[in-house]
Length: 334
Image 1: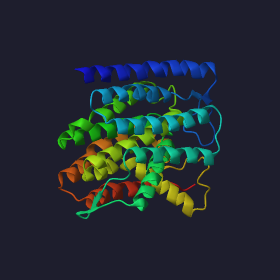
Image 2: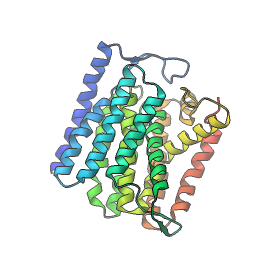
Image 3: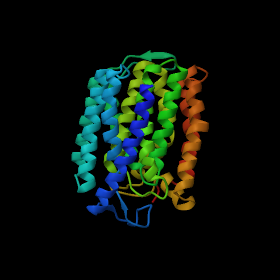
Image 4: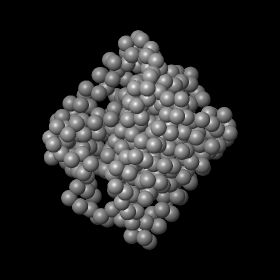
């Protein structure tokens, strides 16, 4: 009963908070002005993702009090999430040089790993590998990449929200199937918080998430992946499969731009989803991503969790079609 009440309160708080933030952005002229790289044609208020940050920051301690989130994981998520959100908020209102943003992101990632006791043992090819210091470094880089790729993929109306909702609901289903019920509530709360914001961000968007919201989603989802991996090693691969659309598009685009000699820190609009949106529109692309997540990636992730597919087979089955689509869309090519 109390969890249902919390879900309703989180949705309401995010919906109302976004309404207030939209009024604030309009009064302060905090607008995303269209340019040659934009996916929109009219100025739109930005920074609405702060409502997601505040709602989740308020509900996570309640989950700890209810015994659904260990205190160490609460500290990890609150600390890292706040650092990333503040960096994004300041950058939304002005500009922070890329090197300082990246330093803050690495500090947030290191904070998460510290409170999670590092990277858990990883099962691959039926062998359980114990992590060492190299795994810690790679884990930090992976969390920073998750944070930034979520920022990169927040470029059309509703996409970042639809991804977070469908992936978190999929993760909750994995926990229910795998009898890890204690992990269900954090991703459920996040999905409901994002749903409240989506009411304002659904195409055509009336407010944008901004770096504060997208970066926060990236680091929190990354922490949830780490949480899942500590619970059961196979859940790591299931979560990575669920996140396949964002991981493949962002990574393929980055690699393609590096090969092409582009400056990867410069803003661009060459992601696969951006090229698709210019051809078919925001609503169709966002809807297609949800369809892929629910009817393709989720079943594959369930098969991996239940042991019907190995981790390697599941990743290949999920990622190869996405890589082919990125290739067809010429992602990363200017």
